[in-house]
Amino acid sequence: MRLIRRVAMLLAAVVCATLFVVAGAPAAGTPATDDVPADVAAKIRATLHERIPELRVGQIHKSPMAGLYEINTGQELLYTNDTGTLIFAGRIVDTKSRADLTAQRWSDLNAIDFSALPLDLAIKSVKGDGSRKLAVFADPLCPYCRQLEQDMQSLNNVTVFTFLFPLETIHPGATAKAVQIWCSKDRDAAWSKWMLQKVEPAGARCDGAPVTKLQALGDKLKIDSTPTLFTADGRRVRGAIKQDELEHILADVHK
Image (cartoon, rainbow, N blue to C red; front, side, top):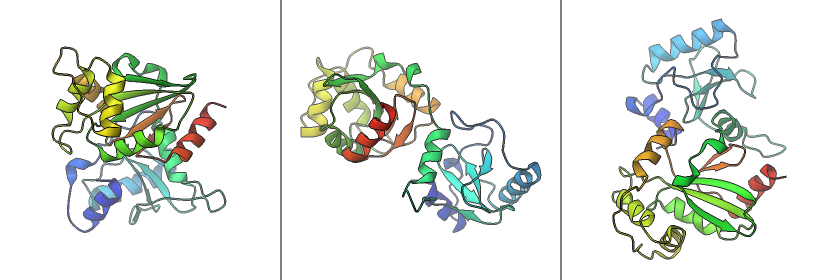
């Protein structure tokens, strides 16, 4: 459930305390300090702590819209006024470029070092010259991951590193399926056939399936949904996106 829905539930007095990021644990790439006046930040924190104590905010920043301040939770960006008496959970969009400024900002704040990813724990798929790089954290039972896999079929000159990231509580049986795929003789083929044709992987259990390691990595990178994508410059993109949009992102990264 996205944070927008969580906040709506909180404001409706349905409290989901455990779903919020704890203060003092900002997402990767998040600046260590607020960039707003100290008295404004203090007032926002005090008001939100009093009214919604379950919502532990991370850093507070200026937003593109006058009068609104950005709260980074590590999972989503929220907006508030200068006293914390109002919360806006939604997207700020540039009306000229049609760019989703909220999504762009969140991606920048949560960027990673692509070169630090343990690529040896990923399923590697090369198309064309493989010059463009893309990492995907995917759940084998996630319908959105299946949709993304289908849309990526028309990409060319790309190397896709797929990290098996089963969300067992959402998709029971995903962990066993991930192990089967990893233990297959041809992991790339097993993954592709399963996601595109629902052909059961032939692999059985084997030693060394990196599911536990990847769960720890996902926690470290604050991955809370699948698919989650990372481009070579560390940019983070969540959710299944269409081929033309993905092509645009890759072209921007690999100019």
